[in-house]
Image (cartoon, helix red, strand yellow):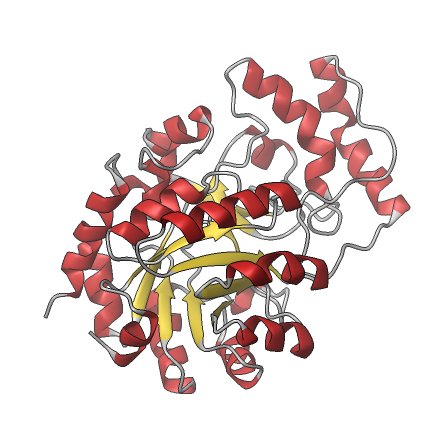
Length: 352
């Protein structure tokens, strides 16, 4: 076991990726009990829900655990752009015989701020991870005053160097294969995004802090490959979605277990920011050309507001047409099993 794992008190070099909307504390507790690092996604939780989940983690965890926050800039409301987005959706609302939502778009995801820090402080989480960079120096100093180890995602070598220079204790090298939102924050240029096996060794060479491999890792062979390229640990998301302790929508779970899971793509239509999911109707119907991509999508996370009624109607009818089916490119390798079994199976790839 490396020194970094010893510092965290981890028995296994396995980190469960935080997956907003598809899990709560139950999955994090199960992974932690198995010797890995369970993570709680907090960006979409209300203050009361976050407080309750943190209480469950603090009281029930048998080992270190993590809580994850977003660090995106608050979205810029652009009435003209949002009107274009609604016009893009208008034919679909007419076809569904639905009324589009009125008024300005509502942001369903909030960045980490002083109010959230005040709520989290009494729980003193052992690990705090961030997506889309890091909070400002004062907020980050407050997080570290709790004794928390700070992680954040990098999608390029430049982002990794920035994170190290600005206080990250370890860096998650997020390859292009990863499901869910890209952690990119220094660039919007998708041509800069590398696969895990290309990105990981470059980040390991560029920084002095531990590097965690993420993206396309779903079994022991993937873990072994990450270790061979210098990873201090691995972060796994999609494989945990099929665990009974996870809570994805039943339609999402079904898609992950079917043949469609082999076809994922990056899309911005669900939130306004690049994220990888299983290709579905929304990703095709709203695309400018390439599947999943629409130049009219408003700032993250405002795009989701306009899709909500379409999504609700479709899901009620048993269709995932307008649902984000987040998944990485290794989804076909995943199978249902308890989180503890998956954690142990992944860790078997770390053995010399």
